[in-house]
Each structure stands twice: as structure tokens, then as C-alpha cells.
Length: 213
Image 1 (cartoon, rainbow, N blue to C red):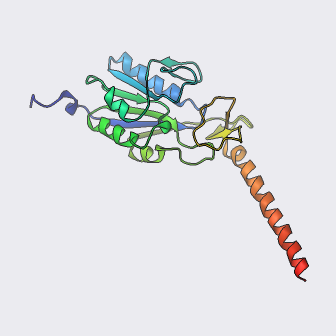
Image 2 (image 1 turned 30 degrees about the horizontal axis):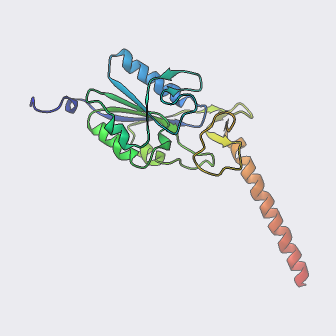
Image 3 (image 1 turned 90 degrees about the horizontal axis):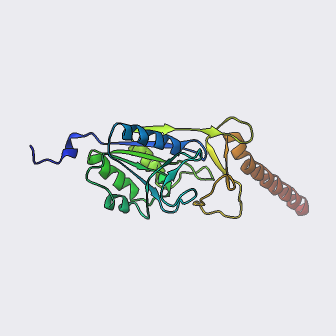
């Protein structure tokens, strides 16, 4: 029995904190990390190298909370940089990782590691972001947080992109690019365009009908 590695005696888990921009996801991840550090547990924090808004390597929240981290270029790099003594792995901006992040997270949990992930569940169109749907499915615990709508002050669950010239799903930015919006003030632009299009089509149909007469 003594030949088994020590991690066999720990219960691994997967926790996901998700929500829109400016909802405090990273702040919650840092809070959990700091509690674990106070308990003298070995923690490693990772983030995608693409996210260099506040710092090249450290994880930094919008409220300026900061924790030392390792920036990686791919999901597999997390396994390569993992220490044998690590008991908790925290991954920020998890939506930016490749599809292998699902296998990596599951492997860590099977090894008895507590995995804490934070990321956007929806992109600027309100659609599922990257690996998040499957990650939410396999999670043992999900905490969906909300922000404050910049238009009306209601709870916001959407990330509204102010720049309309870039339609790529991934566009790293801050308040210069994004706003938190409630469903009403996120959808109304698209609905207005759809109504205008339907109205235009109806007018053209009527005109064509009159010409056919």
C-alpha cells in the first residue's frame, strides 16, 4: 500500500467560475487561491499567454488584485509545468485555451488535484465560448456570477463589444472594447436590425406585388 503515490488519497475536483466581463470571476479565483495558500496548500496558477492586459505572467483582476502565475501557450503546457507537490491548480481565462483543456482538467482531477477555472461562458455574440460548454458539463461545482449593466444598472450576464469592425471571437480588451450588459440592453440592437430587415423585405414584397398587377 505504501507504493501508491500520495495523491491517490486526495479527492480531486473541478470548479468553474463563469460569467460576463467585469463580473469578478478572476477576483473569485484569487480569493479561493489565497484561502488555499493560507491553509498551506501547494497552489499553481496558470493563464493563457494571449492575456497580457495587466501583466505578462501574473493573474490580475479588474479591481487590481494580483497573484503570481505562469503564462502558457497551450493546455498541454500546464501538465509540463506542474509540480509533483501541487494540490491545487487554478486556471484563469480558461475560455482562451484549446480543446485539450478538457482532457488536461480531467487528468488533474483524477490525480487528486482540486482544479479551479475561471472564464467567460459566452462571447460577445452571446454564444458559447470555446471549451466552456463541455467544461461546465464535467464540473463538480459551477458558480455563475453577474456584473452590472452599464446602461440600466441591472444584473448583467452578457459581454457587449463596442467595436463592430472586428468579428473574431477572441479579442482581448478592457473597458475600451467591452461593456457588461443585461439581456435587454444586449439584445435590443440585434432585434432592431432584424425588425428593420423584416420591414424592408415586406415593403419590397408589396412593391413587387403592385408591379405584377
